Length: 408
Image 1: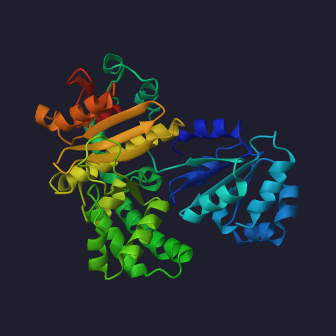
Image 2: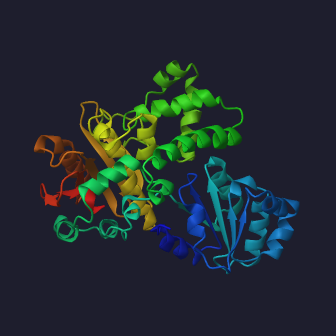
Image 3: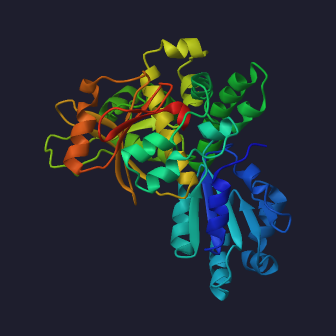
């Protein structure tokens, strides 16, 4: 079993809320995380017909019989339970940590919970393993440091590499799903990813959206893999797939809501008038991305034209998971002007704005940092980061620090 950094945040949420809802892509480790809870917590799996029927026969009776420390796994399958939970919670609003709901691949689950349990529930997303989790490390200190608004000098003196670049590349190539990390057989990861793609697309998507054209949707996911890290062209997707742009819009929302694709909106709050306002996105797991693109080895990945964009997506996910595991709500954006100036990632949170450039190479030249420096100056950011494939932390300018991926 691999320890999950989000567990501490989950326990904190349970001390403040009667109910916590955990969402995340299928097979990311939600059930394994919940299995670490004491035996005083009863778990009911809604994919198990007997458990599901026990709830559906009389949801109110089920809640009265199980008033505390209850885990409902795959809760999207029993929306009828939510009104009963609301009544039970309202009966004793002071009691915290009573229920945990978990759900996979269902955009409707959050909507249903929000409408029924508003003000009574906290949300937590669990992703596949982070870079640090895959190599069995404690959370990297950079995330807590960033939230404390450090000076560049404080960051420079506090961040150190923790693994080798070879380990980073292994994680980048393999992705973060736990099963391949727990089975070291040479062919297992390839076979598992192949079957996971078929199972997710053919079973889960079909059950959630029975009227969807599965073959066209699978083609869309392949197009998204090829377009990872680029500005999205919905019209081109519609033309290639022979469907309407509104259909592409809906399918993109489904891909984002089922945690396969991450939608990254454009930053549009600058005085710069010539901004590109179209979103971009990334396939969230680099291992699945490489499987979709038939990249079969690290050597082939290094020479593939998609390598830079794949690296960028892996680093973005690593950063976002790191902040989420600390309980920090962070909104990602990308920044691009019509003149070609670009910043790969803008993070907005309680700590302010943090612009980040992501480079597979070691140290970018000053010309490549121009857009980042201009964004820092225009928005008065105290700090900007460059995440690199280098071996050490470096100060590039007064405000810009280069952080190696080995420190994440």
